[in-house]
Image (tube, rainbow, N blue to C red; front, top):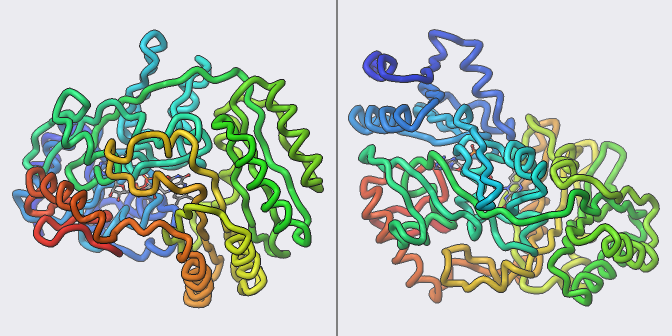
Length: 447
Ligand SMILES: Cc1cc2nc3c(=O)[nH]c(=O)nc-3n(C[C@H](O)[C@H](O)[C@H](O)COP(=O)(O)OP(=O)(O)OC[C@H]3O[C@@H](n4cnc5c(N)ncnc54)[C@H](O)[C@@H]3O)c2cc1C
């Protein structure tokens, strides 16, 4: 057992061991979104409070050859691993808005809701994801898309600067002017190069009230409503409009809804909404004017924390075809009993717009050409049914994959070599490997 006292002596934050504080250790474990990973037993959690803490922890782990995980909001399956030291950044959650310059600087431990709360009160926003409890770093470093992405692009496209601690304990910055090559790599593969400590984002003007909320459809009419909604979004060609078509499984069965957002003037939004409801005749219309941060939180109930989830990446489809929608509804018919998959969701989220307009070479994000992202977040209150749930999800994912963008084909080799060169430069020993990992010796891992 390694002696942690030299680290404890210099830390502003704290180290949590099971043997010393079982309650706090268990709280760390139980914060994960996915209950399936709560059986893992990290050797310690280090709750870092400052950049210095991160530097000291990384150096200590490297020196003592301790395996490391990096996390904040613990929504991914990489958040913790057996025997690893888990660096938890969630206390580094400051949010500083510069209204004049229209930028926001955030600590890497901030959640998306922390940022929206501070920016929206100035009628400003950066595009963030659709679950307000995501950690800003983990989400951005993958690219990150949400309801505002059709207007402003991926979240990573709007990140102006990353500050990170490398495997040697150096604190560096990546931006268009400082290490532009690393800056490029951070916007899609960033978790491979170090521990990000802060991020700066571009902000945009948004109205005080957006038009947002949910339209509910009877299951018998949902497939045709979804096709009409898809056509409507295509025909309008308005980046300010975004829709997420969802199938949410309650204990009593699936329910179909369209999450609607328009960030232009409320008058224009109201007119668009009326046109869409005339065409699709929802059973219940819960769309209304509301502040953007309220809308951004309004879907959180669908992805309750702490049940057992199987949630692979799904498919980014170049075109949402009638056949694709039919496959999804076929999948609904073949779903396990709703009592087994209570809390699950099938999502069809609109992309395109500005994401597509930004040049592909600006970042390694591979899905710019996608019109929609389709996937299943399958939850089960009873982990004994995990394999049944997995079989169902994989079967639908496989059927949809013929429309999916495949990011690891031979045409992407050149880009992967570029990312690998960055990995070799910044983390040649692959110290940061609990992530979608690029092995410096082998190249990107495809699963
Ligand atoms: C319910 C749910 C909804 C989602 N919705 C969306 C969505 O709308 N749009 C979208 O694009 N994605 C979405 N995702 C995917 C999500 O963005 C990723 O799972 C992301 O990695 C979560 O980051 P986190 O900080 O919340 O989780 P964590 O588990 O804390 O972090 C995830 C991983 O990111 C890396 N990481 C985190 N912080 C740092 C850091 N400071 N420095 C270096 N690496 C770090 C680590 O590898 C870590 O293991 C969703 C996921 C879930 C579970």
